[in-house]
Length: 227
Image (cartoon, rainbow, N blue to C red; front, side, top):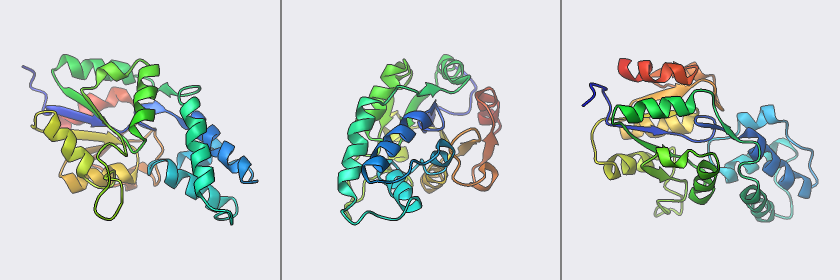
């Protein structure tokens, strides 16, 4: 057995494992075009990712003129339909991602993904990119259903991280993500969290409140050992 300090390592998906900005941006701008809006630059997409597709589109609409008078739902459905057909056109793993996953697996660490992306999209994306087989479990934003208030049990709720830890056999767990949603969920679950400084940070990485910030996958394992 390895002396590595964690039994389970969980990862966010968008902006942590995979650069999805090209495909998310295309889907958002498709919906904006249907609403008669100007496209949002990809640089702005980065700071709006984290809360799932609905939150992403709401922010994009607000930034381009406010919520449309004819309602949000048709444009949200259009975004989902477009994204479902173009989920992995431009998306790609970040440099060093695969090597880090393989190194963790070689130390008998169980790997999982917790994302606010709908599970079907996340599963297709990871499969298309050849990454799905690295993970014992995938929890999407809709995987755990809704709570009594009708809200998906997704980040920043701790529920998906606690579910991962239980389903993967318990033990010490760490999480890696790039946004306040990730840090808040991990803190609520009592799980150490590293901030992926290369991702879609909705605040400066050092201000998100993680236990440490890493700037590349080459720093991941040393940072985990230092927690």
